[in-house]
Image (tube, rainbow, N blue to C red; front, side, top):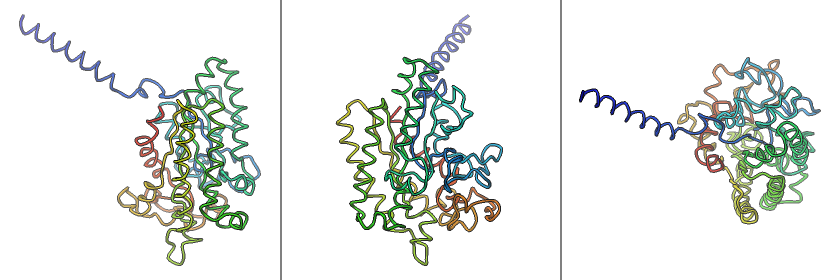
Length: 358
């Protein structure tokens, strides 16, 4: 009898312990941590919004999508998943975050979030204009249209909750540095590096505040990476040894530090909003400088073609071969990281920044 009572007590104890441990499991195991992820930006976050617009900044052809489900080129500037997919998955929402302009989106696709990002866009309006892509102001117009669609699907009350509690991600700025300021005289004759950084900060601040005025309460802005260290910039501006282009990195770091200060001002102006600058400069720079530490072998060139200049239409299965083992490469083409690199970056961002917004 005493043995039986002891056994029952043990079972009861383990039941209580299991229940307490279950309460410690992240809520993503039981449901999404936020109702939706809504994204604005450039090619880093573009899952295919450029596919059907008249621009050369697109990649809906092989070998892009080599390691995506079904080896399908979706318009993602990568061999596989991009950061938005990993973010949506980690938050327990869905495996892939779709492009808003995809005409095959279901009601469930819409209410759980989309990406408006367009490869080649920037904070500077000139950047998107030159590339003939969807500018940030145009992405906001599409967002307003999207809001009406969600209201029609979910009703006003539920839609209001979705828009207030969703995670908003903004990732843009690299193209302003690499494609507008340094290669053309259109801005350099008017602005030195510090004043151009200030110009970008002003545009970035205006965009974030427009999102807030449209109901966004949780906004993560991804800082500009060490763009001077991507393979194409090393080829074009890194000298005979293809080192990291210092002026490009200087502009990136100036923007990041000054926008961080500006974001604090915006937070004070809009109390109660959760605003975070997610700085990826340091972690990506470390991956590039010490690739072996992260399981890579090659960081100075991409996997596609020579890896030194090929990107978008120059990276195609007709004229550009693919490296034997993409897992050894930090970069997929001469500008965009591989799926493996993106996974490392998102894991880092989630632990350091994203958890502060959910």
